[in-house]
Every structure is written in C-alpha cells, then in structure tokens.
Image (cartoon, rainbow, N blue to C red; front, side, top):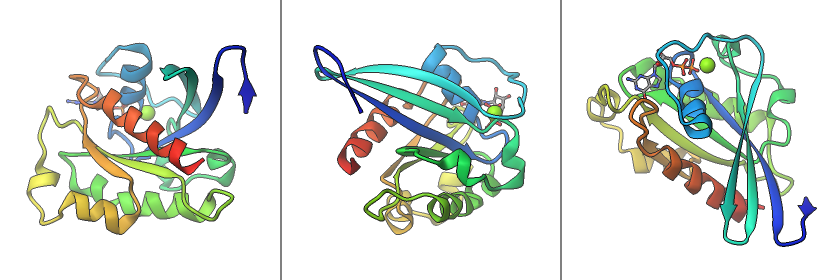
Length: 182
Ligand code: GDP
Ligand code: MG
C-alpha cells in the first residue's frame, strides 16, 4: 500500500469473469472509457483497464482485469486470480446457460484464491443486458437476494453496458465491500 501527501492511495485488482459474450468487455469499456460498441473483438490474453476514483480523501485505483477470450475454458489459472481483491461475476440476463455457469465461476475463483484471513474476496453478481430482457430473472424461481446469500455474493445488480445502467453503482458497492474486507 502506498501513501501520498494528501491521502492514502489504494490499488485494487478487480476480476471481471463470466461466460463468453455476457458483456464483460463492454462493462469495462463503459465504466472506464465511457464508450459502448457492438463489436469488441474477443482479444486473446488479458486486458487491463484502470479506473481512478476519489473516495473521501483517498484515491482508489481499480485495476480491472478482462479475461479476453480465455473464458471458453470455463476456468482460469491461479496466476490470473492472484492478489485480486474483488470480482464481478457477470451473466447475460437473457441467456439462462450463462446464469447456470455462475456457480462454476464462483467455485473456480474461491478454489484458487482467498484472502489471508481465509475468506473469499468481495464478489458482486451482475445481470447484464437488462435493456434487452430479463428472462433469467423472471422465468425461474430464483430469488436473487437469497441466491447471493447462499452462494457468497455481496450483492447483485441488473446492469446494461449499452444504456449505462447501474455500472457505477455496482462498482461503488464492490469498492465498499473490498474496503470492508481489507
Ligand atoms: P464478453 O465476451 O463477456 O467480453 O462480451 P462483450 O463485451 O464482447 O459483449 C458481447 C456482445 O454483447 C457484444 O455484441 C456487445 O455489444 C453486447 N452487449 C454487451 N453488453 C450489453 C448490454 O448491456 N446490452 C446489450 N443489449 N448488449 C450488450
Ligand atoms: Mg470480452
């Protein structure tokens, strides 16, 4: 942790994981670059984006990690997860299979990374593309609040990278929870 003249600076590595095509890259671009496009190429490798927040008198730097093409394997290497302090796990609110994959992503994350106190890192669930539909949220009997409680998510948000819905809110919520786990 670094200290600057005026306030503390915090750097948090934040993972953005979930199935291919759910909108991970779009969420990051919207949040960091304030832009949206319908055709981000599935770049291979790992992409980083840095978002700087003024948080009370402190500076919070969020280093967002985009898995970019490796999600087809359904799991990631420990190296990728290493030292992350928070995660977004994203599904597409119009595609049930991407919701079914959430548990697998959470288990993969928790099996490869934990905080020094043995807890899992702060994780927030994102139901993306809510501008397009929310079948997954309405067509099954899952109560999202209970689902989050049962599966170790700090909370969940309906988001749209397209319409810029709830992305800042979800990020602020995650930062608050990361700070609480530090
Ligand atoms: P990734 O594979 O998870 O990184 O997904 P992308 O960010 O590449 O998005 C996949 C496709 O879904 C692209 O065509 C995006 O334009 C589209 N998309 C992403 N977010 C949204 C959203 O919030 N609403 C809608 N309607 N489309 C979205
Ligand atoms: Mg992507």
